[in-house]
Length: 82
Image 1 (spheres, rainbow, N blue to C red):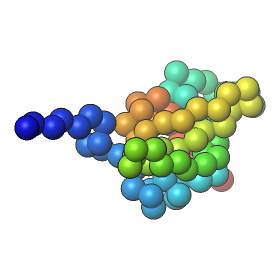
Image 2 (image 1 turned 135 degrees about the horizontal axis):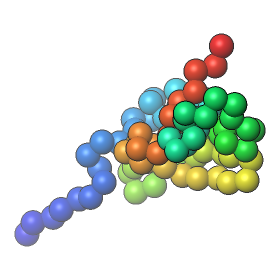
Image 3 (image 1 turned 30 degrees about the vertical axis):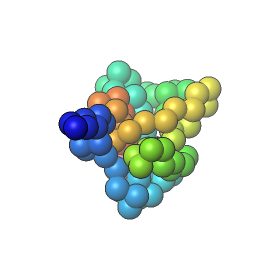
Image 4 (image 1 turned 120 degrees about the horizontal axis):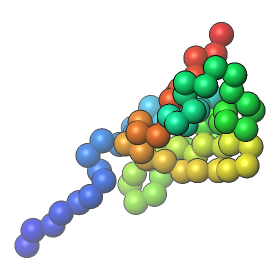
């Protein structure tokens, strides 16, 4: 029997995910905008484990999204806060 698994190659460790808590993020499509509005800035609001995969919850003013590490890397940019 040959069993294949999908999506488990590059995932958050629990420590990586917890280290991101309260970090501010922006979607990659908005990262080059100089004066971001509050609607475009989100923060890592939680960590969840589903099917042995650790994911982060990102809260924007009008949206809550859940991302794996791969999707987070593809879609989000961490903002450096002074």
